Image (tube, rainbow, N blue to C red; front, side, top):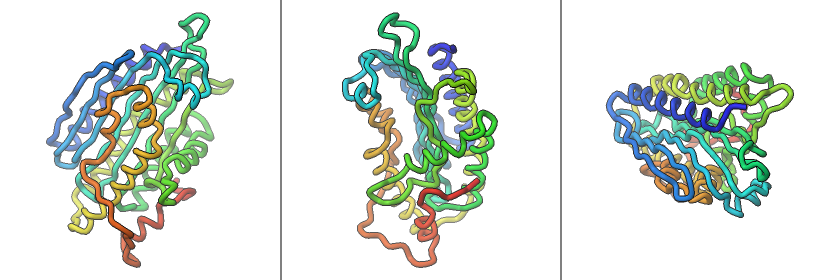
Length: 304
């Protein structure tokens, strides 16, 4: 079995690769890095890009933390062990252009050491996912995004895409609004080795998914970054960002885990947009692009 140190080192390398590529895509802004230590064990590297040509604010964060698992999380995870280790990369990018979509990705690894030996992990799993939140849904972009995810999933296991796409539809859902956060993507958790999948297979899938971020998002940025837009389009962008904010503060598991384990608050909340608006009782104009987008914010759309 690959070690947690090897997994952590691989994720740090991928963080480096993604940051360098995003700086090239933006063409102006550079990442600022802050290294931090967690009280209780471990730490990470928070990297923020902002006020760029295309990226208003984004974060590409790495963490590797360990220590005592809070009672509330032991209960939520249905485990008895006290100690934990978790490492991963978390990305959220908020563009300044309303025709360029918000994107989120994370890959992570979690383990609980054996209470008997204190060394070999008694419980371990991988999790992660990637999803797209367009301010305006362009169907060709949605099909491109989902087809890329399906191609990656199909290389590793025949039903990964189907299972993980349904999981994303259910997970990235704003129940109190009765709408999805965006067009979904894939989401998985507690992925473990089986007779058909080794730990190395799952780790390779995790890395392949993470490395798909740049070619996929670069294409979507370049398709839309030079489109004209109006003040109305910007106001709609701010309204869609408010839905993103609501999801992250009410439902997002990563936000809850970070807060429960005494994580660094600035890193946890870097997923929030710099500006958002809540419009009272908004009604889209019939036949508008806004109405079209709202009509596509639902589960079960087959994009690939």
